[in-house]
Amino acid sequence: MTEDQIDDGIDHYETSEKISEADRVALRYSDMMANAPDKIGSTIYAELSEHYADAEIVELGAFIGFNIGYHTFFGSLDFYPMFTPDGRLVSQDESRHIYGDTPVSHLDGAMERSQAPDEAAE
Amino acid sequence: MSEAKLDRLRAQAAELGAVDENFIRLLSQVPGYTEALFDSLTRSHVDGDVDHKLKEIIRIGLARQAGDPYFGTLRSKPAAAAGLTEDMIEAGCGDFENDDRFSAREKWALRYARLMYTEPKTVNKAFYDEGKSHYSEAEIMELGTFIAFHYGMQLFTRAIGLKVAPG
Image 1 (cartoon, rainbow over the protein chains, first blue to last red):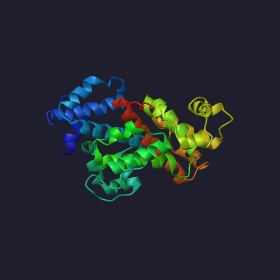
Image 2 (image 1 turned 135 degrees about the vertical axis):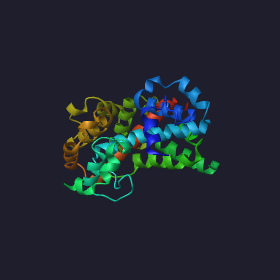
Image 3 (image 1 turned 120 degrees about the horizontal axis):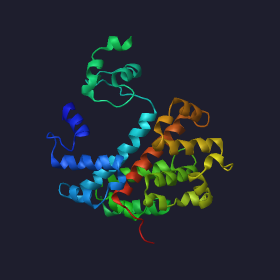
Image 4 (image 1 turned 120 degrees about the vertical axis):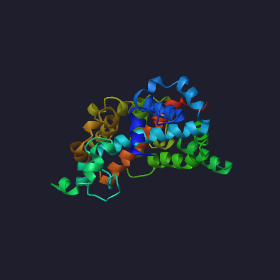
């Protein structure tokens, strides 16, 4: 799994050629749970059933719900990852500089910012 | 998961009342999740230092926000035994800010749950600073994780269309 695939799976999952059809349907389900729960119905479950067993659909649904719940809570706590994208332990101030106040792609500057700690400390 | 373990969870669920047979049956399709999710759900509700009755009001209010009839319908038996009434649940899910039956401390917790997923940007440092005048940091974390976990599970049961078991 590369950062490029992660970005593509988040931003362009409906058209991406870097993910499978099974992945695409799972990502659509996740998007709907987060942003359009009223649209969840028999259609998406039929699509999911083409690629996943019932147990896997339950696993996906619980995982997605859990993540939606926790990410909003964690966001309110104003804390940042302990490590840079390449694994270096950093302070919360430096991490805030690297990752910014809202979630961003690691390809969108975070990696470069993590490799310039002196600049971050200024 | 063994039948004996499932029976233990069923017995715990029956004792609590806020989870029923249908949720256990749903989770049991993913054996690796069943016990962990059930324990997290029930312990976060019943254990800890924050009043269980207040958590029960929060849980039901969140279910309504999530549009989840499953968790919104079920009621905690320990909370009812401790004196929580439907009237207080309705009050806590309604205009609690102007209700003298709730303390400032309880109102902050109810506000915390209501704002978390409706106006998350308002749950900021100033909001948490106010919370610290009512609760310890451990209690705030207890409330926050409770809110996050239960809301997440309610989104899941809403999506899956889970219904309360008859009877």
